[in-house]
Image (cartoon, rainbow, N blue to C red):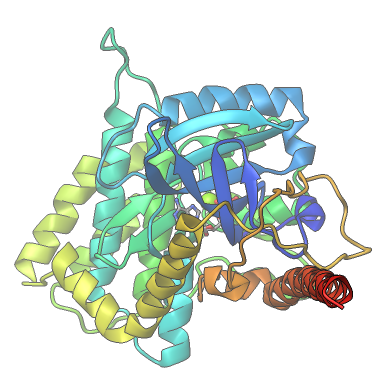
Length: 428
Ligand SMILES: Nc1ncnc2c1ncn2[C@@H]1O[C@H](COP(=O)(O)OP(=O)(O)OP(=O)(O)O)[C@@H](O)[C@H]1O
Ligand SMILES: [Mg+2]
């Protein structure tokens, strides 16, 4: 996940809030240019849909060039309709903040999954590693081939194929998100060196050098993901002291070490596929995602590896069931609380260091309490580090509520007392 200086202005401590027609009830992530919220959208007929709303950081939302580019790209992305691509269904501006609403994929991004695997000492089986890359290639192939109404190619390039943009559902589906959105970033110098470096780990050499890009640049990035899954480590590593060569310089040089032998069946064939995807010259790479996919399918067939969404989903649930259960339970609790009234507004703890440029929560007149901690996705908020603020914020909300109730009880008590005294006096 790439964080940059812009992220320094992100909301500190999350408060569920109403944002246009979305009820944002959990902050599930933050990237180089946006904060990600889990939300419920209410349709005109009262239907409710769980979705993800990506709020573009205010520094970028206010940049005209960026906004124009993002709108153009997001409009293209909204045309994509494929099982391996996260569906975008709304793009707009509310309270001067640009936002993109999209399908919610309940599960992990590939980075989070690999982190989980490392923490629990459970390696991701090769079958599933290949499955993830093959599914991503299906999504890429579809997008690269897409044409407009006159059959002219749209020339869509993802530009940011990386583990954090590969979402894996607990049902074993793999979906690419953030199609084309990275292009908007090229229009702004608001991304810090750190932000650019974060993305550089998966850049093709032509991308890192600022050259023109086509679909083959995405194949190079997919090749890096595959290389890393097979090697069990990052391809390019940033130096801890920030010294040379930087990630960007490594990406420009594209010096790819040989993969270590893992004793896989027909290993040479597999490693040749990786090598071809990672050729520095685009002409020497696979010409299309389909061509690379065909070779991978042949390898999988030859080696009798079995990978399907059903098996992958089972494997994920078998090993990370606890996360699934926690996540679903928390969603149900929030959903239930929402059915009983308008969204609770919970005051976040004031953070004097927090810049105040994202929209503040709207206060609703009728307040129903939600267990704020229940709206927390166990995995994704781990990085957000705002749980404490949220739980404390919730207590504060409850304390306010309790104080109001006490005043009402006292007032009613005094009133009853006065009536009794009056009655006694009247019948004396
Ligand atoms: N549609 C979605 N469904 C579920 N989780 C999502 C969705 N979109 C994003 N996320 C989660 O939010 C995280 C942050 O997303 P975001 O795209 O802002 O940052 P990033 O992918 O880390 O960086 P980048 O700015 O390079 O895309 C993702 O890594 C993922 O875990
Ligand atoms: Mg992303």
